[in-house]
Image 1 (cartoon, helix red, strand yellow):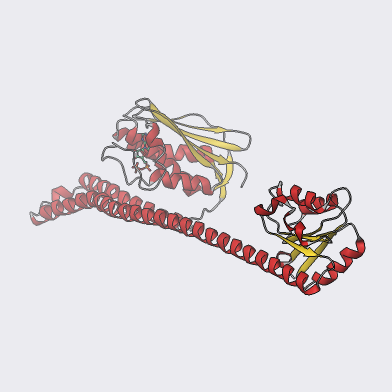
Image 2: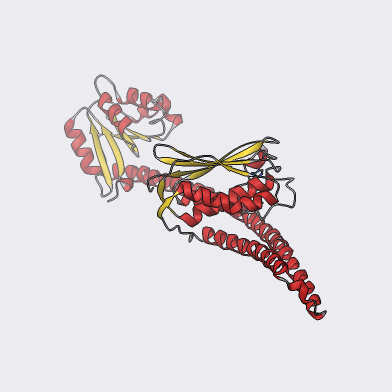
Length: 396
Ligand code: ADP
């Protein structure tokens, strides 16, 4: 039987034979009887157990039944335990116990009438069990109400998230449309211009120099669309937990050099310049393509928001990690915006329309984290920003 369903009863009498006899009368399945031969022993048991009732012999040496009852009434834990006094004296003693008004008190008279004892005990035990059951029900109700409240809160939260997600999706759609529209428009205008020249049989227009320029312009527009679509694919991979990195021995110094070289023409056309500080060769197990992607994101931002001032790239090798820094001296980021810019589709408030979709930093952070690293930013408005990608040298 489960110990929770056992009902404990306390019987107190200084005579062992009385205790034995009483226990024999009230013993029943599901009950556990505790015997105490003195008031002190009874108090010790009362502190340790939770009793459904106590049957106290009135005449005991040292502490009599009434004194014990007074003590029980003065302690919070035992105050409400129903007490049945057993007395050899006449019924006039019934009200001798002053504390009777504070809780259930009853009397039994010696010689004990077995049926009277049993039915009194049964009543008290039933009351105790009912009280326990309703306490349990109240508790269960309270728990279920708390659960409902928590559920409701979750629901509200989910609803707000959903609304935010829907808003974000709508914003996103229009941003994507806008971002794709620009290179597509340029390509469309280019093709119209070329058709016009063809219609006029102006073959000179398609000389080698012009053709090279056209191909270069087309390449730039196509690249910007491909990058946009790749970013969107990366975001959906991140969201579905499918962004995987392919680790291979990657040498950082030459990788930094390569990326800086690749972006130098873009830097010049945006009126800036990228300086690469010397870095000792260091090889880690990283995904080369993804490290390049992070750097390109940070450098593109530095060019975009760097106020045409020089940008510095450095790699510092520490004991168990490398710190790749991209520092610009541009518009900087306010504290308020610093909290938001790593979230997807978030762009700094008041940023002009020259930015992208607000995915670059989100993807960069996710990529650093999937390498076991992280991205940090320090920035002062109008002085510039320093983004640091920290990558562990040992695989984590
Ligand atoms: P975006 O495509 O808009 O540049 P990012 O995720 O790369 O998206 O950047 C999010 C926002 O963080 C940008 O819109 C910009 O407001 C801000 N930001 C990023 N890098 C810089 C920087 N180097 N200086 C100032 N602001 C920056």
